[in-house]
Every structure is written in structure tokens, then in C-alpha cells.
Image 1 (cartoon, rainbow, N blue to C red):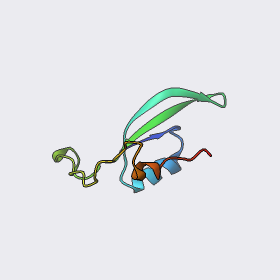
Image 2 (image 1 turned 30 degrees about the horizontal axis):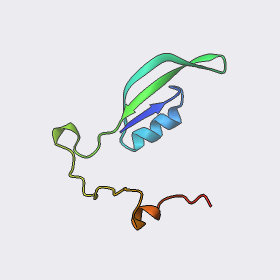
Image 3 (image 1 turned 45 degrees about the vertical axis):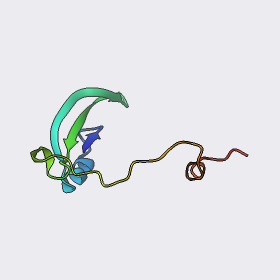
Image 4 (image 1 turned 30 degrees about the vertical axis):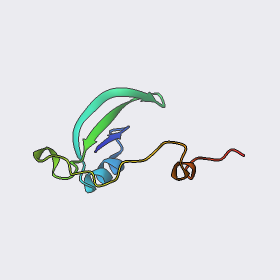
Length: 81
């Protein structure tokens, strides 16, 4: 999972993400300009599951059905009466 912090001076946001397992992987210097000043962008990452040491977990969700004509599909359509 990635997080992009739009201002490297936003230590509160960086610390919050670190508290939840994110780590800084890089900083893009002076890539944004706001309120008459240049801003850095901090890139953070959090490993999901066991990370790259193992394959992703099996998807246990059933595939979505969508034909648009059966009763199950019609229940999800927004009515525009």
C-alpha cells in the first residue's frame, strides 16, 4: 500500500502513517508549488501480508455477476423514474 504526503513539512501526517506501519521510501523535492512556495512530496509504503516473500493470498470472494438483465442485476441498478 502506498501513501503520498503532499508536504514534507507535514510531520503529523508522516508520524501517523509511520504509526500504522508505513515507511518512507523517498522524497520528490520541489514538485509542487502552493501558496507561493515549493513543496516536497513524501512517498511511503506499507507491506501487505507477508510482502514479496510469498505469493498473494487466494481471493476468497466469488466473482461478481453482471449481465444487466436478471433480477439480481436489476436490484443494483439506479432507477431513474
